Amino acid sequence: MSTHNSHKKSDKTDENHVDQPVGLLTKSDRQMFMELGFTASSNFLPWEGHALFSQLMLAEPEEAYPRLGLAYCKIMGGQFEDAHNLLKNKIVLSSKLKDYGNALRGLAFHLEKKPQELDELFNSNKNSLQENSTAYGFFQILLTSLP
Image (cartoon, rainbow, N blue to C red; front, top):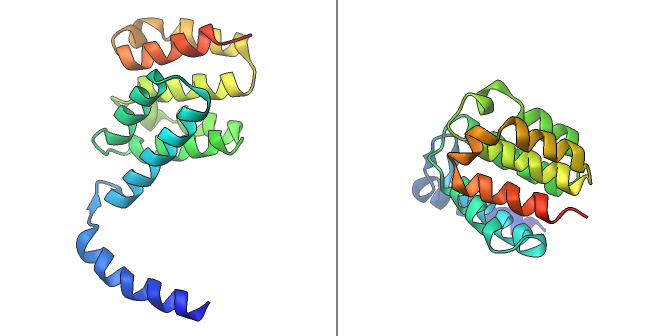
């Protein structure tokens, strides 16, 4: 085990040189979130889900961006209440990524099997979502796949 730790320490010097932070996340953080999104979406969503995650993960980093990635991780881990709290944060709601935040909240409601909440969230944000075809399409997938 100590060999692994010393190997990691030597890699860290190289990483600091190559993996400079982009906004609040490093490039490897962004890649990790993107891979997680693709893996999870391929397990329960059609290809349109990939469009949402690829746009989300490759978006210009801003303060809302890490919250979206963290909320997605919490959704995948079943921590729905924590995810909703992150996504209802005023930083997310006032950002240009608001529609993606709402789409992730929709995903959480879908996985929680709360169709009424999903429908209400969609209807209350319909006008804004219609301006973002990717997020709007994602909601349509969630709504049509409800039992």
